[in-house]
Structure formats: C-alpha cells, structure tokens
Amino acid sequence: MGVLVVACVFFLPSWIVRHDLEGAATGFSAGDRLKAVNDVRVTLLQGLAALVALGSVALGAVMTLRQIRVSREGQFIDLFTKAIEQLASDHVGTRMGGVYAMEQIASAAPHYRGHAAALLASFVRLHAPWPPSRPTQEVDLERKRYHGGLRDDIGAAMAVLSRRTMVLPGDSIELEKIDLRGADLAGHDLSRFCFADSNLEGAILTGCDLTAATFAGAILRNADLTGSNLSGADLSGADLTGAVGIDSGRVEPTPTGGPGGVEPRP
Image (cartoon, rainbow, N blue to C red; front, side):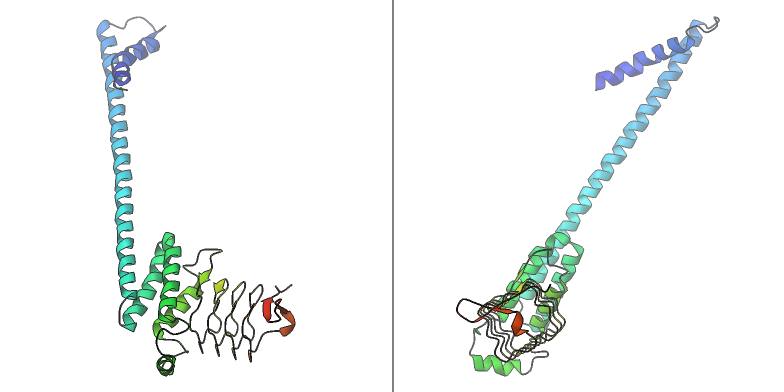
C-alpha cells in the first residue's frame, strides 16, 4: 500500500502533466513543466491528507460507538444485577421495585426480555407456591390482608408479565404449582401462561385472554371466567366445580371422563 502511494505521488504527476500537454502548443519551458508537475503533486498530497484525515475521523467514530455500546451494556448488566438483588429482598416494597425495574430493563434492552420474564416467573413460583411452603392456616390469615387476593409484589409481577412487554413472541410463561386463590386478574392477557397444578380457587379471570393457556390439573373451583377467551386452552384434569363462564359444551372429556381441553373458537 505504501509503495502504491509513493508511486502515485512521484510518478503520477509527471504522467498527468505529460498527458495534458500532449499536442498542446509548444512554448512550455522545462521550468513550466516542472512547476506544473509540482502543482499536481501538491494537489495529490492534499487529497491524500484529506483521505487520511477522513479515515481517522471514521475510525475514531467507530471506536467511540463501540465504547458507548460497551458502556451501555455494562450499565444494563449493573441494573439487571441490582434488580435481582431487589427481588431477593426481605421487604415487599423493595421487591416491587425490583419487579418494575425488570420491566424497564426489558423495555430499554429487548435482548433482556426473555431473561427478565423467566426471572419474574421464577419469582412468582418461589413466593406463591402451591401447596404453600408454610402452614396453610398461616398463609390464609395473611391473604385476608392482600389487595386483589395477591401480595403486592406478586400482584405486580403478574401485572408486568401480563403486559407482555418482556415476553418473547411464542414463549410461554411457566407458572406451575402456584397459589392464586382469590386472585383478581380480570382483563389480564394470560395467553400461553401455564398454570398446571396451580390453585386458582375463587380467582377472578373475567375478560382474560386465556388463548392456549394451560390449566392441566389446576383447581378452578368457583373461579369466574366470564367473557374470557379460552381458545385452545388446556383444561385436562382441572377441577371446574362451581366455575362460571366456561361453556361446558365446548369442554372435551378426557379419556377418564374428567374435564379436558377447550376447542378453539371458529
């Protein structure tokens, strides 16, 4: 590359001058020709200098952009780590902050969406297990103080997950074996949520999108599903005693005679 540049600077000007003056009227002295060659050489050098400067600017811009990206990614990693620490807090308010922090991170950095959704689903399974990890009577006593049937941090996690801002297209939310008794989830988008073997007794699921949701083996006693979209939902083995809003004509019996899946709406 260097040899080519040197050749252009030293030999190209002479060729250009000779080509331009070929056939021109005589009268150009050797000094005039030398001056013309030098003028062309100066112009070439200025052009090369401009190209080098432009290349330096472009390279600097690329390096700066890379540094910005690395710095930005580092900030997201720090925020993500901080949100995880908040979710592990002993204080409900701090855990709620972690839930909403996860939502903000997933919104600002889409490549974190799947990770954030999986973490919040794990958070719900850990803090609202069915059967309860503590004596049921103790848990039931606490539930009487909950707004909407759920502890504030669990309610926040369910709300964030149902907004689907962090759920990748086609992904399901794994919420098996959780305690959602009496939960008010009216109007939530719970499509492709898996509630297998969970307890949703008395839950309010009116107007929910339950498309392709899984309730296999779940308890839905006295739950209200009025106006919900159950297209393709799996209700195999679910306890539907007293549940309202489910068209029994659309529930296919399982081989054992229990309630089964719901046919998709035409």
